[in-house]
Length: 168
Image (tube, rainbow, N blue to C red; front, side, top):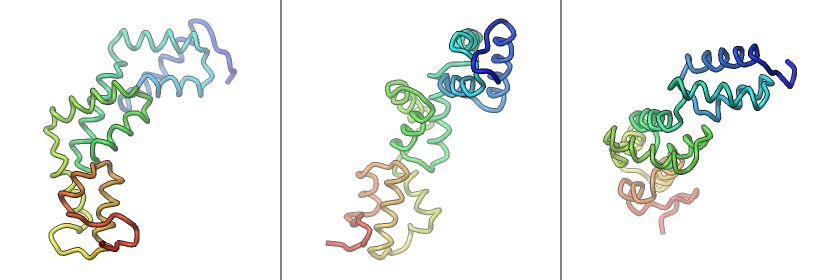
């Protein structure tokens, strides 16, 4: 496709492309902009289309962020920090992402300790005595999933999180 596409026909094609993407799943304004850029639409066409979609109620970054945060938190696989990173990866600003995370946490009654327990149970790292290396591995797993040091410490005690797994 050419790098410059203008006019009513370009707006129609760009709108159809966005609607096809939105039919699959909700998307952020940033994601749709990137998709339109890849297809070679001009900045003017992108702004017109994104403005229309927002006017129709199909594009709302705050709503998208709340719904995405709620979905990620309710699955119990990620802690708040990881959810925040995923929201920002969708091109959402820090403030929008933080507000969405806060709202979603209350909405789904997210309990970080219970979610962290669930992560460890899935990996069979809970409910039995763990050696130093397993404790360290469990701590690294929870840390990588976005759980706070406080939650990790509550579940694993004072376990060392260094790769050697040696307790001091």
